[in-house]
Image (cartoon, rainbow, N blue to C red):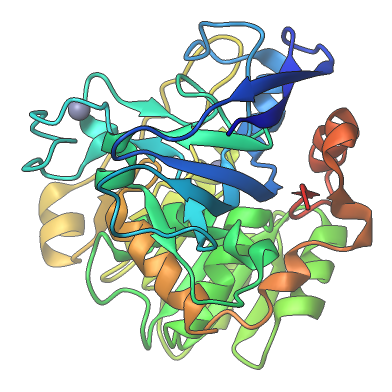
Length: 369
Ligand SMILES: [Zn+2]
Ligand SMILES: [Zn+2]
């Protein structure tokens, strides 16, 4: 039996998507055949489309990585998955070497630390395609998780971006539950983090953003009595500290705005016991700029217990946490990430990327059903 698989190929940076049909066969031993259900658009896809990415060496490219799929067929020896299962996928994937100390069967699981690290939609073809056959190492090692029967595929595609945020929020213990959290930026990563903080029992969540439009959308749709919005203007530091009371400073600062000013603001908010998650990297046409800041290892780190940390992408740790929160319905408002203006079909790929690049958009979803 063969399947006609449709891919939307991006011909070049700033280019257009062209549909391309191809026959694919049955999955081999250990492999699975997936049918794409929903794909959400990541800001990294917007960047790839706009300026490219050195990691993408082959054009035309198959981008997009935030996917939920139904298992159509499984190869010999596959026991963890069966036809009909709804699965969610991660972006950062093992390098494929089963003996790798990071990615292999006995590795640490820190795939993004592997010198041969690869990612879906970068080195590995993405999910701007209707079907995919996953190799045995992907099926065995992840990142792939099964959702409960009847779970909404439009919620399952949020797995990967949620996983990335949860990696950053859990690398250091005890910094969210019952704590005061500041989220810098009101884009999708901050909005996912906001919902995770609510699910994890944060005491207060302060969201800081420049633009009022998106901040108001997020507060309206996701806010509760623990959530406050602060306008990022010249009084932002004093305003954040005011909201931290009776504490003097926040316990956790997640820097989700990919700009120098975000880092400059984040370090001004560091106080007693504050953990900084340097979540959003800054890069531009000139590469990755140096953003320097002096830290006193004795007074700030030792005596004030400050912690400066970051994570990159997600491993099975974050993927499993995200799958749990989604499957147990701990993120009841996740569907509000996407409004009517943010829903597209595969033949509208260019328009979908365009919509995702606008400043008021939270999450664009492409429906393959
Ligand atoms: Zn993503
Ligand atoms: Zn590896």
